[in-house]
Image 1 (cartoon, rainbow, N blue to C red):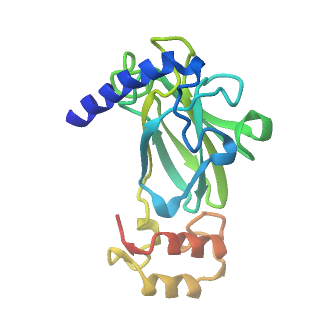
Image 2: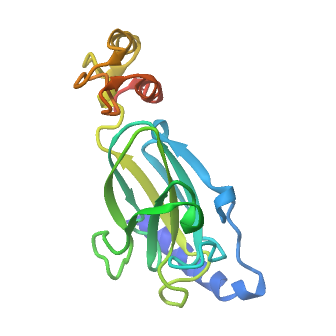
Length: 220
């Protein structure tokens, strides 16, 4: 509750900043554009970030004020993306093949799915992602007009994956370690249905090895 209240206070200040944005007072985040995208991978999950939405409509459509991330998926499975408890009316678009509609294709979109939305009006979605694929994520506000959206709206962003790391625990000891690595090597090559086939492509290979390395250590 305290964290939510603090975020709301930040959001109110951000709204005030948004009213002045036309005068050049908007605080520009490092990932304002696709070129500045924040990259993370399966080994970083659960991934979370807080901050302020950007100052420019970089994709020239909904959402309006936006920022960008890239997720390099190394573990196939059900991934959840959410912005619950952000301020105003936030929005998520996910692309494959490139960042935004100019370079990629829309893969998924979410708005208003968080508990209590509206009035929270924040997005939450769970989608199946494939290892070896990069996904570009645009966070923004749904509309350009107050009270729905403004530059520098405070946001909260989190990405999780179901059973992250546990699929690579091949010997079931609660750790991803040397024994799991050896088991993966022993299963190397075409091996449909083998537990070491972490990406589900019927071949135990380099993507499975990278997924195992990304989840090395205690199983979450």
